[in-house]
Image: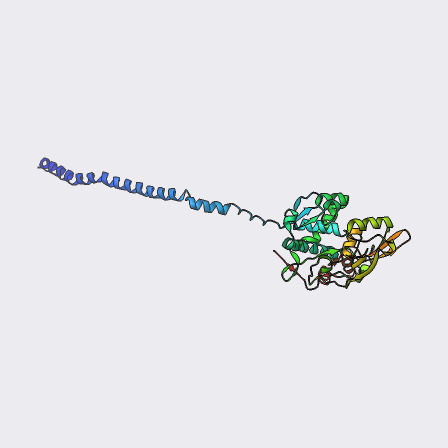
Length: 356
């Protein structure tokens, strides 16, 4: 009985367990498959998060690399023709102002006079840019002669001129003028013809008396301190023959056949006291023309007959229009600012920041 029951129990046990055993590999496979997918998902996330997309890489590189410096705008230049060589020089504004001031005023003069000269030189240059026949000057706005220290001096000329004092003198002018490179003397919003001369005769001349162009801010102002300037009065002597040669060469149609006592006659003066016309050999000659012919310091002159020839006495130095440099020096020594100096010599103008 027992033997007959045992096979039956064994059969029942096998019948129950075999289906369960058949399920084990499938469950393990499903578990393994599930782990594999999780790892794959994590791997994909890691892979996708690891390399930075190209656009993002560029963005991060831009953030990690310092931005490139914005290039400074091209510095404005003054175009001048070298009268000795014909070469046109393009000079940065500050360098031009320094070279112009150095050629026009002693470095020992007061700060405010030097500043007034620098602004006047820059303003005049811009006026010439707008009005001059630049084609005739090869593209230059006006002519200078650095080698002769006329109008502007180059760095090389300054180094030779100042010698051991070059660095100190250059730095002084740079300190004074650098803050003023955009400050221009304007009339009706445009650069003014801020011309200048060394010494007036005590009053500056009207522009139309020299250049046949009447500018409202160049009609002459009193400059009495000029009379105290060194070199205010000078006398030059000519022999009779020297005077004859000059007059006959420079002016056609003069009658110089008679006595030299009668060569010079009636003289008329401008409102400022400069010679307007003078009768020479029966003809009337402009005072500015006779000044040029005789190489006089000023067109404010008198002619005196002497035993051996002629004495010509001048008052002032230069054409007499605009800023008197010695007047500016005297005003600055009295405590006047460059703005006050410029407003006196150029009435109706304004000092403004100018980017034109």
